[in-house]
Image 1 (cartoon, rainbow, N blue to C red):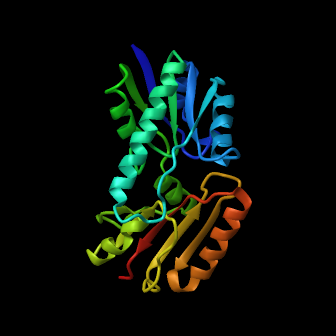
Image 2 (image 1 turned 90 degrees about the horizontal axis):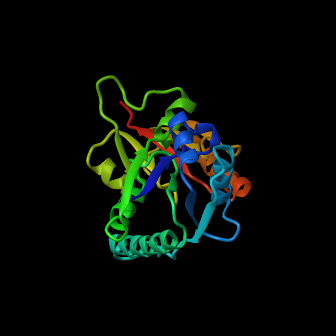
Length: 241
């Protein structure tokens, strides 16, 4: 039976754990989607592989996805996932041996790789294992030298798309991921700890009262995008006590 290893890699070679490095050295090749011919995130994946065992990287064109806030967002995501599974299956037929899939951050948090692998395993007989990685919220907390929650209190993790729902529900300690834009209107008195492209050379950090640092975050976000060609940001919002 072929082995498929889902490997969390944080945000680059510096975050690869000893367990993840061993997993990379054990596979015959790594499958990686590319969003464009000059996808900078593909370059990072390639650098990770080069440093840890140098397994060949099999590049797969990422199927197109409707990202313009479609009316039926779950249906658009399902269609995209189905197309990705078909692409994985085709690549596995063409490339025998054990395979690795690299996941940004950790596979357990706002990543669909494991869902795709479950669907893929219905088509291809696979022995699947998962190697954890360093997640974006972990990096955010480390960079700002904070705990993500106050003493004895919970932390709510959600997406930018669902931030308003979390606020309306009364959540007062919110980690927000997957942000196309930053919707911080009417949250001026909240405290924010924000970070983008954490662990990379284009990393940026801002913290303070939202009303005081909103312009700084917008400027930093634009600067990061200009430098790196992409932005992955995450932030903690805390309601004023």
